Image (tube, rainbow, N blue to C red; front, side):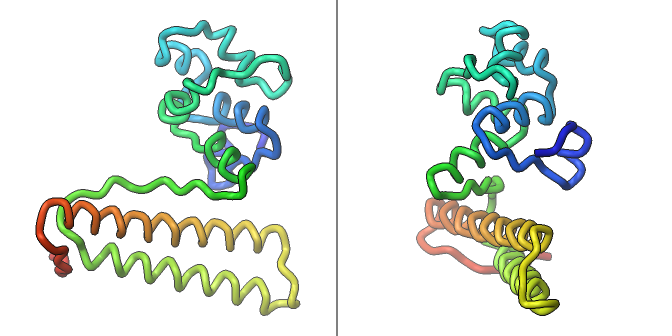
Length: 172
């Protein structure tokens, strides 16, 4: 796990191994400080929230009803990502989509898939083994593919709900 907000937000995100590490990352590496999170939530003191989000306090956890507000306020997906991995899944944030289905969304999805294939090929090509850094790159590329795919599907969903059939048009 990274040790500071600056490192975590610089492109080397936390990879917490435990629930408490994920809570610590959310509380200390997100967009807001613990004090700001407590103020935003409005019903909890900074001290109590600090204990709940500290990886060193195994006796205090936030209630489940705080998971979504904490994640949204902190702009940090570490906790949700950890929970998804703990049950054998992955968390992918779906970008907000609006308007008609754009050919650019489809093109982005294809581009991201090409970058994933390149990362996999490069990881195996050097020596037939995948290093931890190469695995990190492959995982980041995979999540980019999943995000692009989810955004495209969300655009299709919006198009279907507002018209009788989705249309694919080129963007100007």
